[in-house]
Length: 91
Image (cartoon, one colour):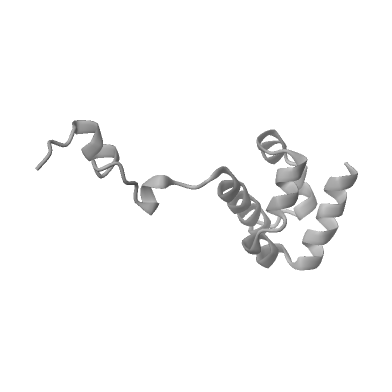
């Protein structure tokens, strides 16, 4: 049985494999979760898309892709997402 290092035991499985939980969220997943969470708190999609937090962490192209993610569409509705995508293109 190979020796497992201290940090491997704490932060990983020690065999170079990562579990789903230890991998964490991708940047796009985290930003889409932010949009969904903020919308559920009552903010409009337009307000969220103009938020400095989102603009500082994504390009226009990335924000358009976020509006195509199924979880965002379910949260804000297809029509709202389409209108917001058009506003992003115009800004």
